[in-house]
Image (cartoon, rainbow, N blue to C red; front, side, top):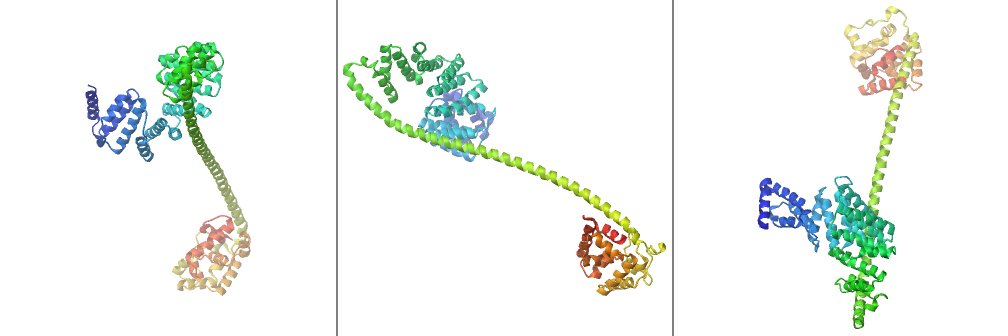
Length: 552
């Protein structure tokens, strides 16, 4: 009947989802079943044919197989399957399944007794789980298991923060069972550190949350409270709490309850009952339980209850148990040292990562601050430059206005762009560019002007003697022209720039200046730009530069 129901459920899920995508949906539904009914989830997983699954689905199925076994309290005996799953999710990262694979890696190695590897996987799982509300329940589970493992390794100080983190997650989930269990674990951790007040406080909290739980869970907590009272030397309270609790606890806690009862009854002077509990422990198949039982039996208060004919065999057995314990203890000590070393490495690695993250934040903040300062500085510089440019332009215009008196022409009627004597209209148009300021009649009617026209017409360059004559004519038309130009360029006027200025003053077009000086257009433009920068202190258009030169 059970097999038929499984087949029916599989068929129904396949029909609803269809194809390979249906397998994914089926696995997700089985995943939700693992916590409620792990045995049924395991049966459903076994019934799926791996050949029908994709690689992703196959590894998901393997992970769920391990999860179902773990939820069903099946002891893991091999790491081959979980290693395959971890390797897959290491190269195919999944925000939900990768942390689960790492966590169950820790669970598998815990069962195998390889505690350092288990701790490493638990830590890696936490590193893959951001601390937010969505991940908090699962983070609580991982932290609880990490705390339990560290407590088992007697690393009590290191275990406490993980257990406290698990308690906070249990409060978030409002999980009474988990709260009772984790408070009990935290109390046991403090008890092992001999911090009795904290241990008592946490056991009381565990008892509060265990009120609605099963009898065995409440009995477990009573045993811990009893041993705490025993450590306080409050024997009467301890005796009241421990009475009959070993008959109520679950099988995993039975031997612990028995040794606690033996110690408390012995301290209370009820030696026969203490001996009975100790003897039961000494006959246990577990070496640790046998050792504890023999320890109690050979105590001064109980040794008298051992039959004379049994003392020698008991002593031999006790000797063997102690030898085994010492050998195991050495291996356990080495294991704990290795675990502590790995734990320390993890803490250092995490601390280094956090420091690197903080350093990165500081670097980014520093870059933002520097960029803000540079941006402010550039904006201020730009605004200041614009103000300076306007100021210099105004000063230059003021200078031009002041210098206009030097540019007065001989006769008002001559300050027009009349055609020079002896030149036809075509040649005059070719020669002159008189936009803005008019050209002086002294220049237009000079022999040098006539010669320039012919040179331009015949595409010949100008010679030095003609340039000297042009300079003389310009000085006649605008007395002090060169001196004013030198002053406005702060004494940095070059000969080549002065030659260009003379021809501009003569009203020669830039294209003709290139031909007369036998220079490239870019060279003449550069000289005109440089003149403008020297006069105004900032870049200026060549047209503005020419107008300033003509106005001098």
